[in-house]
Length: 173
Image 1 (tube, rainbow, N blue to C red):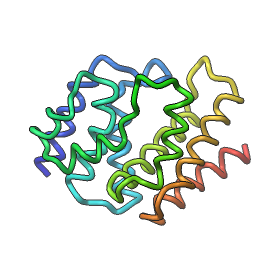
Image 2 (tube, one colour):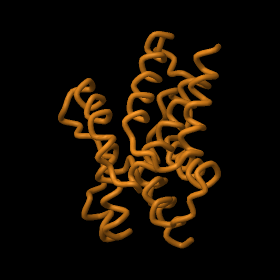
Image 3 (tube, rainbow, N blue to C red):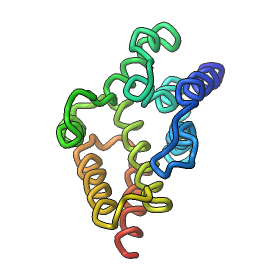
Image 4 (cartoon, rainbow, N blue to C red):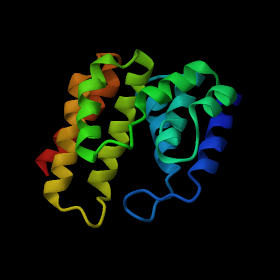
């Protein structure tokens, strides 16, 4: 439990000046949501996986280094976060295609976090789409998330079912 609380505090401090794409929601809500999805829907209680969920965007979106994560949270947490970190030197299109291409090669731990991340992101796009996004862009986002999930290892049926339930409801609307 201490590791999860430490990861929550670390992530909150690192993301403290960031907002979600809706421009209003504090960013920290997202990593907390990912960890909650893993625990509540996926039945995951492993503190290192939950900590990685809380930290999954820190290397990509803050000044956090892999070394810092390794020092603070250990090599397993660092490895999970590194697996999920996009290379910001690539174009948007390249990064999104690599998420799809790399999905089958992620570790089981990283796959769990990845699925929960997609559930959280797609849920947010459905409930509160970014103001500048039209329906076409929201649909494209959902389609890309689906392509990632379809390429993932089958590691947690409850998480996968939940993702597809959300997607089905969205597409019916």
